[in-house]
Image (tube, rainbow, N blue to C red; front, side, top):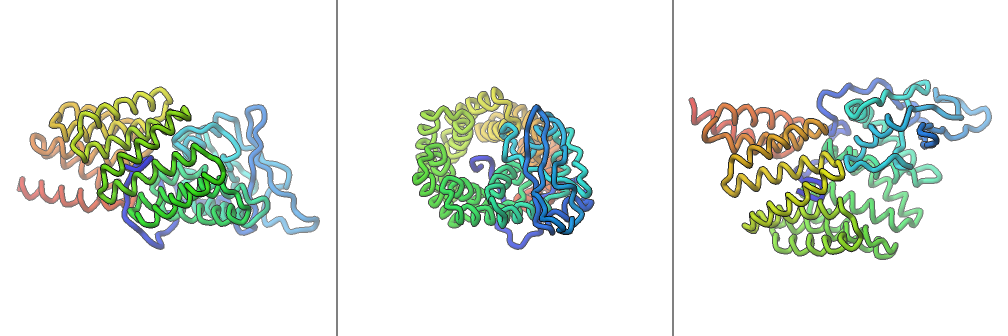
Length: 397
């Protein structure tokens, strides 16, 4: 798992909607007019309410179907928090990065829950990508990289590789034109994560090297620690588990000095995977437990679900199927709660393996559900699970 989880095989020219949340509605027109007009909205947050302001139009300019150039009310802070939770499961508070858009005639999307936020983003993903592109070509361009960064959590949740790369590449070009060094580092780091998730290790490594260079130039110690931690995954997926552990430990020391608790917990989780590969199962379990305590204290549900999955897998490798099943079932419930079909599939895949010997029908049930999610996400794990299903069916004819 990467700094936030890991999975995927390299894909090219995938449609933007590849990352759609399963079962979400299709686009209904949404913000097509704003995209074609090259217009985007910036948020104003005052008194617990959020307003999206449109740029002023030149006198006599055609409206292109846009709402008046004053402002459009979007809702209360609680509603915005639901959308921000979908944009970034890490739970950053509402702020400038929470760029939202409206539908035809200025009608605000109904964002009253996390599931509504996920559905809206899935349905309007192509339009949001277009708005990020329009922002990069406008002045000031910083909204493009604010929006791209805000969307990263959703892209990760949905495994939406193509829109992830498209938004970040146009935002990176805008940051380069503006000579925004720290922002270039952030975008390089994020692009590296998208590529390492797809196992493009050379591409990811190049982005992490560039990120470290920009963070050093900007004097950003936290960003530099992120670049080191992220590069650990290049070494991990190259099979250099000892080297990956060295990078994790270096990043961990930096995060401890910075007091960055969430990052420290993510790094502990990453260390556990390297330790598991090195046969250090007890260390892996100890570090996962510590990471889980931090995520629970910070109320980070997706991170907690990933950690529970890691614990279940570690206990299974340690030969403790009872503890493995307990943690995997908790991961399954939590992943469904936070809307991560990938982590649900991961839990079901491991539950199937734990159940195979004494409950093959239960194993088939878990694997069939895992296969459904992996297939919808376009994940390469689908082939592995499909083979497991075939094996068990052949054994019990």
